Amino acid sequence: MSATQEEGRFNLSAWALRHQALVVFLIALATAFGALAYTRLAQSEDPPFTFRVMVIRTFWPGATARQVQEQVTDRIGRKLQETPAIDFVRSYSRPGESLMFFTMKDSAPVKDVPETWYQVRKKVGDIAATLPQGVQGPFFNDEFGDVYTNIFTLEGDGFSPAQLHDYADQLRTVLLRVPGVAKVDYFGDPDQHIYVEITNTQLTRLGISPQQLGQAINSQNAVSQAGTLTTTDDRVFVRPTGQFKDVNALADTLIRINGRSFRLGDIATIKRGYDDPVVTQMRAGGKAVLGIGVTMQPGGDVIRLGKALDAQMVGLRKALPAGLQLTEVSSMPHAVAHSVDDFLEAVAEAIAIVLVVSLVSLGVRTGMVVVISIPVVLAVTALCMYMFDIGLHKVSLGTLVLALGLLVDDAIIAVEMMAVKLEQGWNRTRAAAFAYTSTAFPMLTGTLVTVAGFLPIALAKSSTGEYTRSIFEVSAIALIASWLAAVVLIPLLG
Image (cartoon, rainbow, N blue to C red; front, side):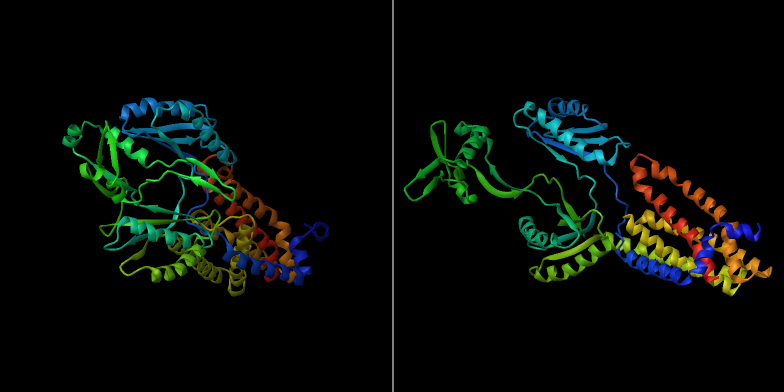
């Protein structure tokens, strides 16, 4: 190509060399903002994705598994078949309980998920009145896929489950005020019950049934409004008394059945207890404990959340009474911090390897030009990730590690082309700008072909595509940034 033809075409490298002050300022600004953006990127263990499963749970105390299947599970299942975007329903019928997992099609758009959950609630709600008498629910859980960033245990010798629950409520109030915390849930927290135990011999002697006894107790403990009494100055609400305040009040209750009156405590054993048999239980170190799970808000920084929780836990542990221990048993922030440290270690190793190889094969000056471009490209990549709301997680970090080996390809080609032209007697300015006219577009084509290799991941309409989409996004940003560095930064440094 003649000199006249070279001058007639726009040359980005030559333009950068003519406006060195402006280009250096822009590169320095992008690098600084990129370093700042890196510290503000959302960090988590996994990339955010939509969990397309809803749990529908229904209780029918006293019913057999077959009754639950035929009169509850099958009815709800038939109604759910009318829901759009349904993939399949998996159900489990147990004595007294129906458990159903409604799964959407993997190809359903993310924006349609909330509308589908609304349709499920509406359609099941339409047939709730047709379910047998005594059915409790159905209850819906569309947050089935929540991931707990931190899990703590609360334990103490001599503390009952009810006392642990009360102290956990105090901790929960404080934890919900920590920036980045969305929810706080409990594990292994048994429900409290009042057990009224009466022998079959006593029931036969008195001629009563457990149902009659239960109805009598419920009628005595009923909450109802008897009316109001209006005076000239005020309105007084009239309410019946006799509700049970404790176990002793229940034992002192006079029960009248079949024309006979008797004190409940004289014929039955009354005690306070918990779920029997145990429904759920969490154990740590061989002991039953109360688990406390913390969920992060969407798009939050798990590292920043972990530091905030660690700072908060110091004060919470001091406020607990003697004998009560609050222990962290699972921490996603520590795992994510380890992953980020591994990435930084990989970056350092990559720079060291490139430095050694470049210095040996290209020489000291040429090798340093290539090495300097790596942190600049990574800073620009971090800035673009922040602008496009792409966080640091195992997929994006893995892609960055994978891209490290590709970031220097264009830079090596550009700086080697400059070295060749200098050996041929060209001046430095013309030699630095030559790579743009000869190899810039072939390099761009190769970069775009590499990026296009990941395009099917971005276009996949599935949970897998949503989960791994950042492979395409991060690789595209990093490789295009490396090409820009090859045609702008490398000639300037050369």
